[in-house]
Image (cartoon, rainbow, N blue to C red):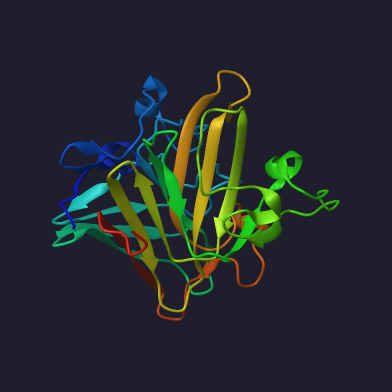
Length: 272
């Protein structure tokens, strides 16, 4: 059964989603930090939770992209942000099954980028993550000590199969254990189960690489003052850092000058 989803955004502060709520349930995790309200282009990323629009990269330069630190503008039902190399516009609307957000990125043809709906979710230790069994899953160097094999010298990532790539179970969160790992799964949707509650997130983009990024921080990040946070992040692209993207690992603006995609959210999961 589906129930409505109510979304609140903050255009003044980077277009951040501050609420993703179903009746009786807020899905977004928050970590109040006054520095988030004062962020400006060039600022160090401030992890305040919610859902950040990370583009044209997630890791790398600028950290968490160039859109999260800029004010957005409302234009009727749409919101948009202008950055040095691109303009990103989104339109969020309710649907009978939840909500959807349509995006348009305009830039010079050939411009490459990674985008992530960097959603940090408020989940219990019993929550589980559901993606297609066997889906290729990229792991990054912070996971090296947790794997069943040595990390290859100089490798930016290695790949295994969901749900336990290279011996690292990622489908269950569990209690804090002092680890923090990121992964990118070759799938277009993910389901989150937490008690009786369900959240399905999916991305659709014709002719562009799509994936779902995970950030499973069980009290392992940051080194000083660690906390618990869980990111389930539909993506365009297949890497966190645009600088590490191979030929098919990033979205590319076609001759039309625009890339269009849709993020859908629902409280009904096909895997349930």
